[in-house]
Image (cartoon, rainbow, N blue to C red; front, side, top):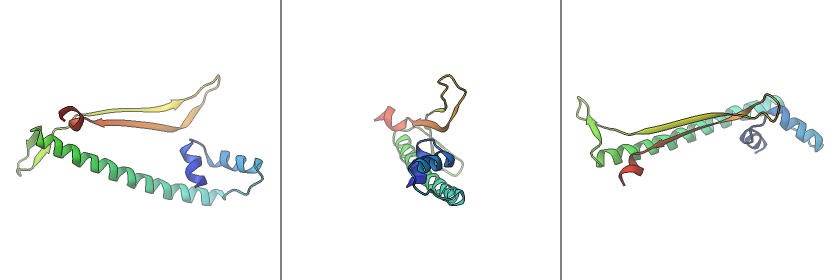
Length: 116
């Protein structure tokens, strides 16, 4: 949980180790932290992919249902879906040059929201 919390707040191993040092609590070794970080990355990536894939299937079905599709040479229906995408990398200055360790990507598949 400590690795997840550290990463989710945009922090790093070093910050976590310093915080726990102030609390006089032993912290994970850097090797253990980075191994857990890699495992979490895979879990997050797989989870995100499953959500995106499921949303894409729903959008495809909605587009086809609404007649928004093309038919390929094999006769398969390819849904026409409008996608809006935006992304940011936060920059916090507070009088200093500093790039945060967190980023956000936002996208909206619009077939469901525009046609229902």
